[in-house]
Length: 442
Image (cartoon, rainbow, N blue to C red; front, side):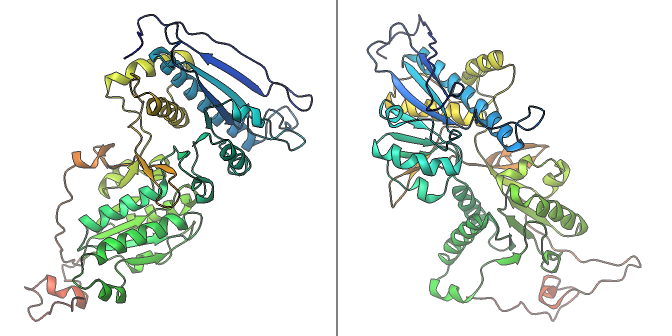
């Protein structure tokens, strides 16, 4: 390592920028440097966040709900970037953060200019989709590396090798679930509950990946095109459709839905539907955001062996991370949230890619980059599959395997046998000795 880190001097410089119109402060520059790191060029970072400094307040002095929430996210993100800048400076990489409001001013003009981009080595943000569309062409013109902290449409990501989508791709999470379901539940009844709303792309990615894997198992893959390889159930963002008609107590029901936050009502209805069919065996695979929906009960999640991808989770058990986390806790009087964690790790990752000798540790798992085959843009795919077990989220390889499904018959209160549907009678040869196994597709 070319620099000693025994003596660290952290300097803070605040520079106020000028606006095109009379306005409050719109930009601040923080410089983080170390006394013995003068031989390393300072990493200049332009940070675009939605502070909304010129947004009009409502009567009574309150911000509109959306603007207030955006400002909270912007501040949390900035705190994560500041923590990362301090750690990089202490490790020997001088840092300068030029923070600008991404929300246009009252005249609709951007509050950052071409000089801000030209002087930077790295641009982080904007967070809002409409502002990314305005900033992206200008950033590309100067050839600067561009980190996106929110998931954006492909037209904003597929722009070349200088673009990195730091937030983990939900498309990659959907494909990861499809690979798991196709490999572990080959003989079970797999159902995909689709909403065809804002998560239609995720549903399409799951279906495409699942079919690709399943058709690869056929001796003649073209024959598989004649059959539906899973049971698709049409729902919407508020209901589960005719799910009850597809559930069977005589086989394992593997239910998948990759609908996220926009389908909260559907998830509430799904929980009720599964509870009403408590005699059936379920395995549930879901969108990562289901873990943050408070109405889903822990005991039910464990009963259904709820499995979903998780990312951006702080590795609290790793003692190497405690120093940086404790520093953040002391400064902010709180634990770092998901936005602070993502911003912190994205900036550390950018510094380590430039200077591999830096001795810094990300708070969550290390980012895993996958290059686009068409443009070369980089997408973060650092997902880990976890199951809710023992009332906590555990890595899938730490959980007991799902036991084989054992079919059983059902009886009325008078102990009389409930007739078994014809296609399941072969499962009970003692009761139905003449039952034949249904014709199997090739």
